Image (cartoon, rainbow, N blue to C red; front, side, top):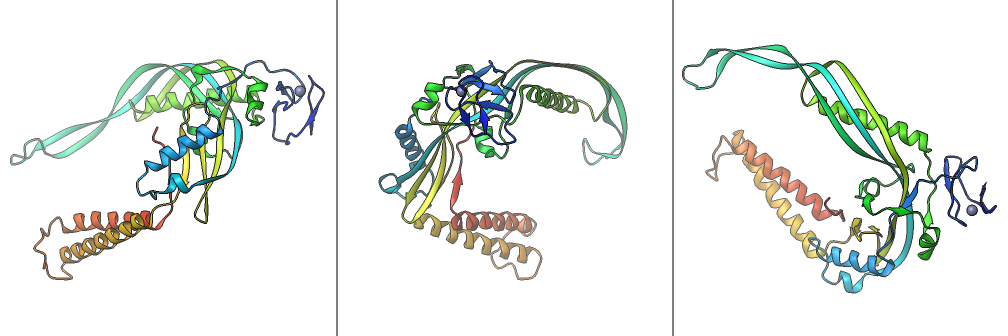
Length: 324
Ligand SMILES: [Zn+2]
């Protein structure tokens, strides 16, 4: 339990919660009761009914979904969760010196233009500078679903956190398990790694580098997500829809029987043909189909792999995400 330093109410907080949002007055505060001012939200533009409609509309466009899904799906659960995210603007400049691998070519083959008998590798010094502005996003709660964590957040549309707006939909506002100091430290490290990745595109090893990493504006933003549950037939399915954009973050859904049967059928045929081609190419069985032997192994392998994928897809219940 924690006590709000601003309205004196008691509320639930776990030992890992380090920046708390009072569920009664909405004030963000440290565990020592110091108010945290850089607290924003992305406004909710899709209420529960609209987000359900968006989800059904999206589901009806997915491959192999039963035609009567939209008509027969029954929503049995919904909850609005406000997920806390830390956003940092980081300006980074890295000057580096390193070595790139290069090669000398010796002994041209007369019969193959552009081909050589021997290569010798050598290191070549390279240097340069990368100046970048990064927007680093860090999920402020442990164990967050990775699709929820990675879904796009329209940070330009942020506004100051409004307790009454979060209450409008009976939303649950999660505490942050990261302090602002920790968030800045993490953002700095992530930006450094991003700079390293840029440098490693240019050189194979770094001899020396100078980094100037400046963590600027860092704020906490709460992002509303509808966690929905619907029933179709005897099964229940879970879905997450971004409440500010209507973006379907992820959803499980049923596949129609015909679609699954088709997937299984094609899967078996491709697996069989693929297997036969491999066998023929390897000479285990005679080449009865008159197929090119040289490619038999490769094509057979690809067909067999596709067959396995179709088998898997046909047999499994699909979980899908919107493409970013
Ligand atoms: Zn309070």
